[in-house]
Amino acid sequence: IDLENVFLNARPVDRTKDSLLSLKILDMTPGFGDLSIELVECLAYLSFILPYREKNTFTSQWEDEKSLKRYILENMLYGIERSHISFDILHHALKNRYGYDSGNFKFGNPLIGMSLADIARHARKKDQAGLFAKGRQEILNDIREMYREYFSLSDKIKEDLMIKEELSQTLNTYCSRLKDILDLITATYFIKTIDDRKIQESLSMLDSENTAWSSLVSREYFMQAKSLAKQAGFFHLEIEFPFLVNDAFDYIFVEPLQALAWEDPVPAADVTKAYVKRGMTYLKPNGVMVFILDRPDPGLIGELSRSKRYEIFAENNIILLSKKP
Image 1 (cartoon, rainbow, N blue to C red):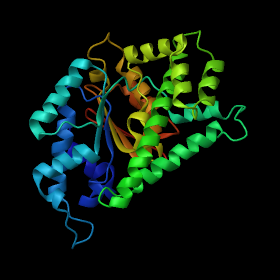
Image 2 (image 1 turned 180 degrees about the horizontal axis):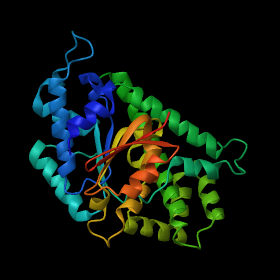
Image 3 (image 1 turned 30 degrees about the vertical axis):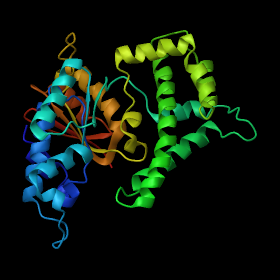
């Protein structure tokens, strides 16, 4: 795959060092780390040859190869891996090559999970909040605002760090509970005994005391949902990558067949369409999904070309997909 061609031609706006290094990129099927490492190396190379947006700008961290590649892993590159073996090899490769084991690469199945919008649909139903309690939708709005404030604060200003620490504690509690609820909602597709009444009850307790919440999640149906979530690798992107609460990715890379390397064969076209449905939710309006296929299916390309929602560019083993304006 010619990554240089992808980055320089898919979005011409990225042809400055500042724009390139502000990207958010998701590798949805990192496999053994091959593509992830290619992405790090390509981004570092492009950074060294592209000019700053302003002539007199200089960022020391971007001019040293070691610190630049760590910056890419810390701030730009994210990944999801569904195989335990591949996940371990990936982290080992990153640590050996860069001396840094990025926490932005997570274990889970990227095709099985929910978004906060799914919670919001349940939260908009009749809300039984008490006189002095917050409604479910109000809590979700508060979480978005807290994350917006959290990511706007500096790590170099003492006062900002104190505020971030306070926000972090509150957000960790809410995110843990939201993950439990998203696991419960996802489990309804597999377990018939979990119904909407149970989901509504968990939403009504989102702002409850810790003891009350602990009592709720210790119930048998909740433990059953959590066990299934662990076994199947439920992956809720906004919980694992919190910046997505108010933001999205610029690029999402997918190797559909690599994603199923450890499973029974599935038609590449079906897997690709599943990734389109899942990934487009988390792509910026001008973002690009990059599909890497051994032999792109002409039928798939034709189907995507006829879509009123997407623009497609296919060349060799690459399909670039973006949202129509």
